[in-house]
Length: 314
Image 1 (cartoon, rainbow, N blue to C red):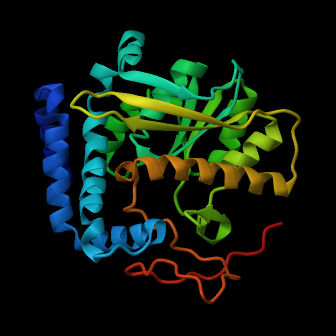
Image 2 (image 1 turned 90 degrees about the vertical axis):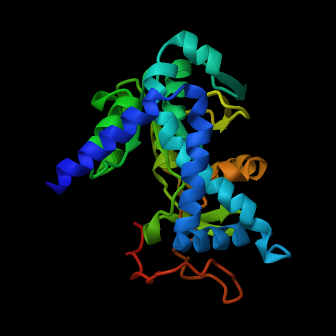
């Protein structure tokens, strides 16, 4: 019965949002994000810690408050926009109207790795990359609620275009060798098994798979970001930066680290330009490298329980 009620509630909410005019998207997100900010004290503290690490301690301390509220509103706006993808970002004509492309894009390649972070509206990246590169299969974690999972899968182009995050690397290799671009949103904390490279000057555990895949298969690696344009329309500036042009396959470990450093550096530049559009709700610096100096000042996250060290990398 609880599942039925929850499913009915989600469907009713979706129906209400889709019945509104598209230009009401910012208003709905503003109301929802503001209410979320007021109600979720735990995540407010988390954002404050992240902003302290990224931008330093403000004076007065409340100076980050307006930015924190803007982050909540952006995070509320992403799912509201996703509900409109099938109506507003479905055809080439709509994509041409609502997306503008900037930066360095690689020449036409049969396969490659498109990487991005939880910045702007990251769900736009799959459609933008598919328009530029052809078919793109994206990695995503399945959502427990089947109603939400169904909605987000449709927005991503259907089950055939989504690679389950569980055991994804093997499927990524298969897709790339079959001549398909793959998309990875991989900027979140990778735990003690990730590689620690700088992000806003502090080592952050980073997923290796995009860089490792690009090097081992000799594929181009491109960082992407969909920056929301001001105004009520669903419109984005899609930026690209070539991290690696591809070439001869290699398994050199130092090459992986160099690419990860470049990826984090590129994302950091975009975030500094539009900090309100980044997911500062995530505990990005939660896990710390064992060799971190005692003088370092990582975030003091709430409810953080240190985990046992991961086995050494072979």
